[in-house]
Length: 153
Image (cartoon, rainbow, N blue to C red; front, top):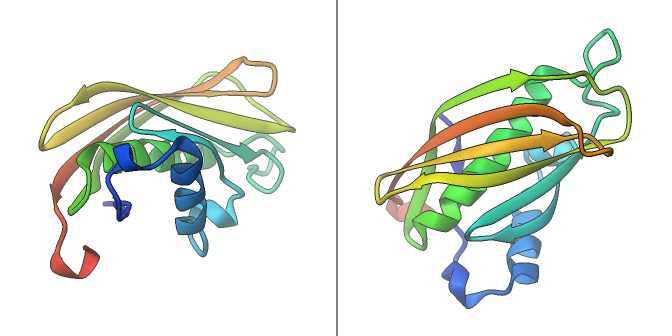
């Protein structure tokens, strides 16, 4: 299971620029940073991030399918953490992913859309597109929302 940290202040108390900067700083030292994931928009209803294809390819020179899944789980978990709010965490329960086309260069950009946001479970659609706007991948992530353990608060 993947846990996404919850931001200290309530999302409504911070601007989109502040939330984006917060999650960029929280990305330091993580798999997301290693893969070059960069947050473009972070708000309670929408998270957008991009990732370079270079360095995230499989032996045939195409974007690795697992890299797409990491990008999808990253933006979906952040969206769920924002929905959960302070003193709560989002824990990944399920992710499914369909790869539509290969990409050899440039960046891919992931955008979340909430499908269901409850008190204990949140599900998001994640669309990943290439630099030309062609759909590369469609993923769905479901996160369990729960109270944060005392050490994570």
